[in-house]
Amino acid sequence: MADVSGAPKRRFKISSESGPSDISPLGHLVNFLLIGFFCFIIIVPFFWLITSSFKDMGQFSSVPIQWIPVPWHPENYLIALKSIPLLNYIMNSVILATIQVVLGVFSSALIAYGFARFRFPGRGFLFVVLIASMMLPWQATSIPVFLFYRSLGWLNTFLPLIVPSIFGMAWNIFLLRQFFVSLPVSIDEAATIDGCGPISIWWRIILPQSKPVLVVVSLFTFMWSWKDVWGPLIYLTDSKLYTLPVGLLMFESPFEVQYTQQLAAVVIAIIPTVLFYVFGQRYLDRGITIADVK
Amino acid sequence: MAAVQEKIAQQFPYKKRSQWSIAKKNALWGVVLVAPWFIGYLAFSFIPNLASLYLSFTEWDMFSAPSWVGVSNYLKLLHDPVFLLSIKNTFLIMIFSNLIGIGFGLLVAVVLAKDPPGRYLFRTTLYLPSLVMPVAMGMMMRQIYASGDFGLLNQFIGWFGIAPQRWLTEPNMAIWAVIIAAFWGIGGTMVIFLAGLKGINREYYEAAMIDGASPFRKFIHITLPLLAPIIVFQLLMGMIGGSGLQVFEFPAALADFAGASNSMGYHDSLGTLVYYLFMNGFRYFKFGLASALAWYIFGIALVLGVIIYFLAKRYNFYGTEE
Image (tube, rainbow over all chains, first blue to last red; front, side):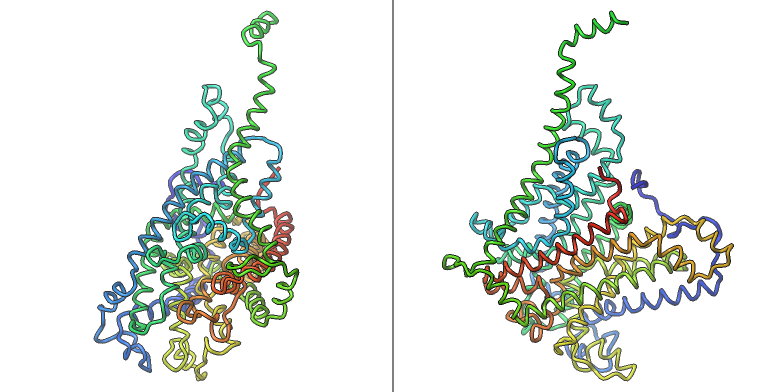
């Protein structure tokens, strides 16, 4: 929890070593080869995916493998975009994730403030319930919840996915509460004497001090929403509303669309993740320290 | 002095009362702020759980009224080979995917922490695939596991003289196809272990070096014990999370979810508990049976949760609570 304040800086070394390394050149070579081998195995399928997305079916099923297709078929991408409304799915995913992040983080921050700064009977017990609720599989409750939304007429809208986030997200509340507890109470007290109410203390004092952790929690919420399949899959049946993973999952096995065009669709679906990583990487690194190593 | 106090008491005659009401006000604010979460918890978690407990004792297809059937849904599931296979598959994934993720994740983290040349490129290469959504991974892997000679994996094992396998169309093989793919997620655990390794005091290693300890002994006697809380936490979170008890999308994408909509892969060989819950609840609309299934899942989660609770207490995961 210690090093979360201030702007993230680029670290020049991954490890904590400060002095000269005690590893021999041979040791470095062995490490380099070992990690290189792992990376190679991990990269091969993605390399294959990208080159295959430029193949026609003849090149795709040739034995031995054609690593670089000649001639290449960039039109696969146009056909993929035409037969699967990927851009539409991506838009839906972005809209949904943005709403969930804004509502989910905002409400969680208020609830976490309540847990962190106010004494009330049953607080400890409720916090245990909160932690327990993070561990239980939420799919297990989905049938009654589904029936409930159906009776409200909310199926085929984003409402069942948006409204629960107004009530806070357990994981966000937990992380934010842990951070808020570490902030000094003396500033709150000073503000109280100056006539600040609880809400304006939260808004003017707690939140500004928590910007880095709020960014991290927002990123995690976005990633969770981006990957979520279960919710959109059971509540949305109109393909116009599908999010990206559901759109991919519900995409019928190709008869008119070829495998290679389907792989082009997979490449398009991965691009936002890569962009997300490129822009969010520094905060992701920071978040790992906050979320998992306490 | 006494005069001053008297003056203050005159100016603030309600001081003693207000002391008490500050605490009360404080508690009231806490309740008001936390209430939305608690209402949400009751509405979206607790009450639905009870409702699904009721539904699990009924037979209901949404068109007629639910009829009470006692524990027959639970018994029916115990005699359902697909359910038993789904349990087996879920546990296999729970154990082996997480062992792969933690074992290899720890290995690459320990190596990367030694700052080999090209570490940033390696780190990105290992980490990025773990962020890719499981559905996209599954669609890619489905082609890589393709049977015949042209599937990438079959070509690869062909170089070692192994005959092509039917990865997804051999009943006992398909679940291993899911488990093998856990290798592409090792970056997720790796970054967490890297952060943990960063927190280990260098002096331990220096002391060990003076004592002439080998790198292996340093790992066994310093790194491993100090990382133990993180390892246990990762293992258990993995077991109850998306690569454990809740595993669904990746096998579904491998199984050609949309195309072959009446089975979970070849002879249901890719079935998992949550996948089977989806099939029963939202494909066949057997709400009673699906609710019984949900309670089996819930029961398993509860048992794992209790184990986590005691381990958390032992390793103090959550810092100091009051």
